[in-house]
Amino acid sequence: MVRNRVAVNSDIPLAVFIIGVKVNKIWAVHKWLKSVLAMKPMVDELYKNKEELGFYHTEYYLSWRGVTLVQYWKSNEAIMDYSKGKKHTEAYKLFYKTAAASNSLGIFHEAYSIEPNHYHSLYVNMPEAGLLKALEKST
Image 1 (tube, helix red, strand yellow):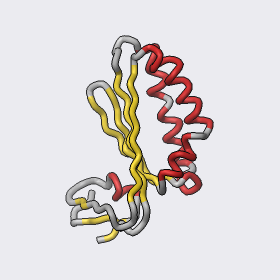
Image 2 (tube, one colour):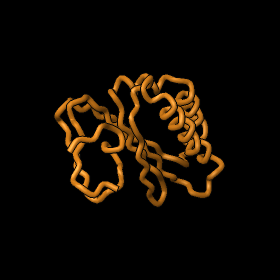
Image 3 (tube, one colour):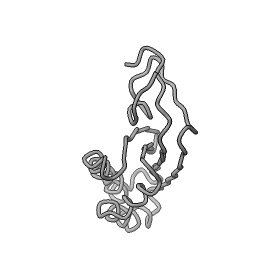
């Protein structure tokens, strides 16, 4: 738990990737569950190869019918490079073959490039999360 005011060093480039899914047909579990479960092996791969892939951290946010992940990366190029890899390609094909084809699951993603010194963050009385968990701390 961060008790004192803590900020994150913002002098490095950063990319933020937001990806989410929304279950459109709750009872069509057989159509969308594999696509939802395909995210975990990809996140595991990212954490195992953080330096090589330019990945920093993932935060999860649950909603009634979905989940959203906020990821912190070194660059948009690193995100795009990862999207061409085997695990992501397999998950992408599975999604379009089953969940998207049946309209049982919706998906979105957004990516933002942020120049050094063009972002800030502040944490008080919070567990380590977001940029604080992803990047170096500075007070």
